[in-house]
Length: 420
Image (cartoon, rainbow, N blue to C red; front, side, top):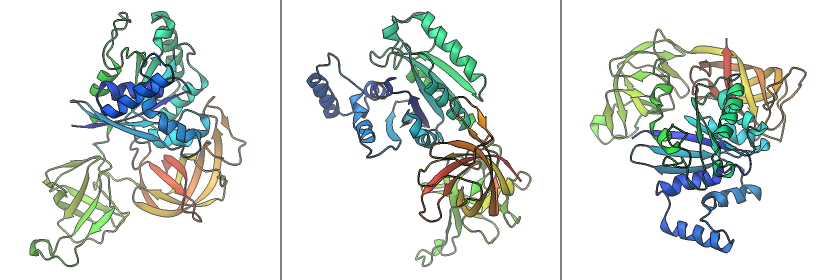
């Protein structure tokens, strides 16, 4: 059974908590005592219905108190698929959190209040999902019950958002009219909207095709750990040497010829091992251990690829960076640590080309720094070659994080646009 990771985004009071609560409730992913507590709290508040948003309200309250402003993750499953929900904060000062939640998502759901229509927040969320190359986008027009399930209103919002999305790099865009409060078109088709001929939201989540979203063409295997038992009591493992990591792209099979970077030496895969035993092929995002026919000096941070299909070995990077700290600003000549796949190096910010207004898409070429939650295009110089692809080709080998050398805190996240 495969896993769909999806992120939810929306403005305040667009109904994100209610939608997640509805999905959890209708898929029977909550315990009876949790439901009883929600029903009791709903009664105490004088609400005539069971307020499903209370299932996630605890985390939202924590965030409002300043305890945490992190992404809230929820898990549930149906007979068809497992799901991981990243509930991302909608407010502009939490842009960094939306970037975190959407960076690993296969799909993003942007909620829009049918009464308010497409807001500045909606455009910002759509831009960020396109910047992060989230392959599938669902625009859920919520609170349709408050506009009398109007087809005309739904079409107005669809046309307005489609016009904006045409300026972005949005691959798969789906529009679904819903009422999270009443459950219309969330898990099952709504009788209140006979004019809508599409599927329910959960049916779409269960059936959206994500296998082809992963890069199965370019073999990329960043080495994370060298397995070399020191005192193997079992003689069969006495000479065991394997290289563990997560497949970042392509398909690997025993007998395949591969090249080791940075040495450029070639060898063949003798076996592919997993926790559950040997496998005949490995592909993203599997975590495996590779064994090779030849002894090569391989360390953490090295890359395994195909001899005729190698990533770029680059020390000069052009990238979009989201700045994630208010302790310091990103400025030209800033010195940072860069972590790309499993390789770490030192980096110098050579230039800040422009700061991007995520609401208007305006490029401010006069900008001299990036502050918390701001996004801009920068040039970086790295002390040792990184084995990279453009972010548009591979999100794993095209992304990186920036770390403050003094505090060891993550201060930025980047997407490689060009490398040399």
